[in-house]
Length: 136
Image (cartoon, rainbow, N blue to C red; front, top):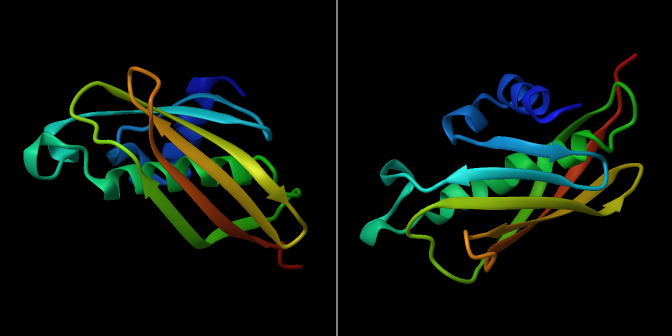
């Protein structure tokens, strides 16, 4: 799928990702790349991007990576997520890259790194998602 199709898929399946201004740059089972943007409404005190914004975008981008690793007809749901924050973002674009750490039959684990415009690591989110088999 190309990036406009993946962005449309993300926005249709996860409407919150549209509110977050997430744009999917590329996506495959091995790697999903996306962007977010600094905006005043995404900030906390002092004009710094809110940690909840970083976590929500990472969850969405990681979920897309999981989706691209699911067996046909399966669904997924986040069962655990952990984020480490390393530096503030006070302007510009934020790049998110999700990669699978483990793609098993019942659980898929992804790691999503967020980087600022200088390529410096802003946060790292690791999430576990259940693989929900299709109902017969």
